[in-house]
Image 1 (cartoon, rainbow, N blue to C red):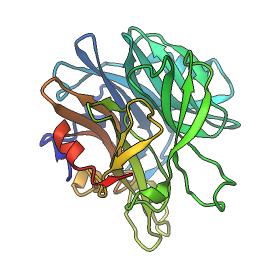
Image 2 (cartoon, rainbow, N blue to C red; image 1 turned 45 degrees about the horizontal axis):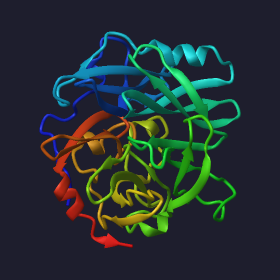
Image 3 (tube, rainbow, N blue to C red; image 1 turned 90 degrees about the vertical axis):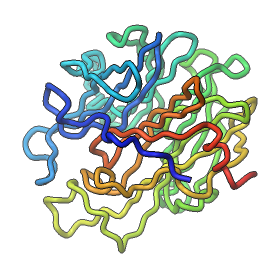
Image 4 (cartoon, helix red, strand yellow; image 1 turned 180 degrees about the vertical axis):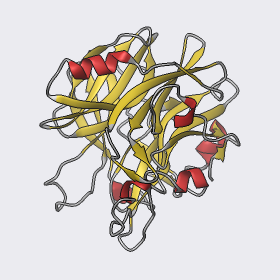
Length: 332
């Protein structure tokens, strides 16, 4: 099954912002103290006429909503992440936020580019103004997402290491899990799922939105990449290089993890739950890219899945939790 797209997609795009913006996507979403919050990635200096025209940079913005559908962005970027970057000459960029509420605090997973590799980090905020960075991984690790509650007294996260030398020097990346007593020191790492388990992926897979808890297990989205070097999926990224080809299709998958042992995969969907087919998913900075970053289970059983489309806009799709559970047709 495919999730039902919101008819008003995109729910947020560059033209909605009152400050410089080009690509608004890959947002983290949570419901905190009765209100919906979105922290989104904004890449500036990119256009359909080619990327890198003039100054390019990335910041994070915040939008709020009463219903999780209609969003009002704040009138300026979130200052705290940029202050964090400016304070450390090693770091050049802060991006790809993921939000999880644990014990009435909002935890922010993120990626940073540094002079010595890409690192994944976790911060915590109580007010969406300032935040405290709790941990940074060694290179190269990213796509971190936290489970919304402690398991056996530990924080638990899904992540995707990017080992260059592993698995034949190919882009064969998998989903892993780590635990922490305090969200600062991480270990007990183990493999959750290798990409060979996913019928619609032939390259990297990794976590997408933070999991939600159901009676059957932890329901989690993941991103899956299918590469075909003979297929040109277009994209603004290569607009200034007519000989270049964008050939990576990103798809959204679904998996069910054991409640007590979330490193154990119980089932997955044999087909993507979102595959690019709408214009806003096919035509953008990178064509045919779907990347979920937020998933909310509402009291009425509806599941809202927020996803970046074409690395350009932020969108919404929905299903009932029962529909999603029924779509898990490969069991382990």
